[in-house]
Amino acid sequence: MSLWSRTRNAVYGEITRTAMELFLERGFEATTIDDIAAAAGISRRSFFRYFGTKEDVVLGDLAARGELIRDALQARPESEDAWTALVSAMHAVKAGLAETDAEMLKIFKMVHETPSLRARSIEKHLQWQAALTPEVRRRLGADPADPADVRAEALVATVLTCLDVASEAWARCDGAVPLEGLFDGAVAAIRG
Amino acid sequence: MSLWSRTRNAVYGEITRTAMELFLERGFEATTIDDIAAAAGISRRSFFRYFGTKEDVVLGDLAARGELIRDALQARPESEDAWTALVSAMHAVKAGLAETDAEMLKIFKMVHETPSLRARSIEKHLQWQAALTPEVRRRLGADPADPADVRAEALVATVLTCLDVASEAWARCDGAVPLEGLFDGAVAAIRG
DNA sequence: GTCGATGTGGCACTGAGTGTCAATGGGGCA
DNA sequence: TGCCCCATTGACACTCAGTGCCACATCGAC
Image (cartoon, rainbow over all chains, first blue to last red; front, side, top):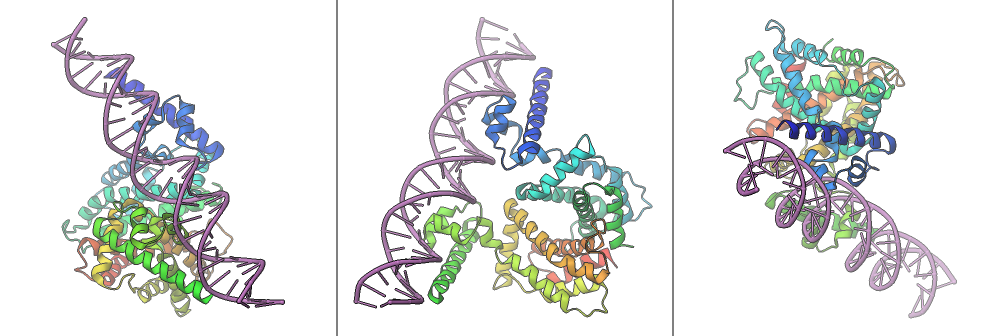
């Protein structure tokens, strides 16, 4: 058990490192799974035992971040209104995906430039949305079974949209303006 | 010229009709392009001369709708603030994609249930966003070259998000609640 | 040491999407 | 009418992502 999971984690990390290196070097679409497998010293078939799709190598841990935001949201005081709590929760998990800002910037740009990555990234955001909505529904005192009550969905989706807009602007200006400020700017534009 | 474009339009329509029939009958992913081509009486290769991807058969004319919304937005009086103009523009183009509400509901559900369709659909929304942002920027008096000014992007993206949330709720409750009301509910939740 | 569970590689397959090429057939022109 | 240009088409081969299957190796438990 211990050895198995250790080697598994090691292989997982090795694939991720190797693949990201290739992606950033020659581009996401120009890198085939055969390339990654060969460079990581595994078989093509084994790659798919670690990652469901090529996109998951880049966006894999993005799904887990949804849980982080949800936890941060639940930690917000009950006295805060839903909108404020959501915005505060987003601030609490602003930690990056990559080691450095420069690397994160490269990844962001790659995601925005590659249609399939962009699409998957948005799918992940939809998962965040699903993870956050119940708590917001609770705070609003909405009937969880009422499908016509879209208030919680609207609030959650809008805050995530603000993050999206901020991320895109951050990548567009090469990280010159801090992401946090851009997010606050977007939030302020919606509810000044 | 005339005959060519006429036959081309005819074939285009024939593929669309045949494919949608198959999609609604046995599902989007269970229908292969070979199935569509065979049913429409064309070759597999010709299918790709009319549609870039299988998703485009379902979402093809969705792209053009972005231009419609932009035109509706430009038609709004200058005295309206950006948010109100955007919401009004959305109302102006609420016309459906399908003949009947029942058919539209089926299509909506298919899109929401199929990951690849869902992703493409959101990509189209991003195109709408790009089409609408310049006009909103103008109305806000923002510097078109300032990448750090995210107000216009935030407003546009949020209104489109409201539409998305409303559409999903509409499909979830089987069209029992009118889409327009759901959209208004989402908008009110953001800016009551 | 044997047994079951788990990881791995190899192979074949489906299905989307692309490039190429020869054949067909309409439209314009002498 | 005959000829040439050009768009469309089908057929074939190809790349690449992703999946199912099977045989083999290896780790841990008994």
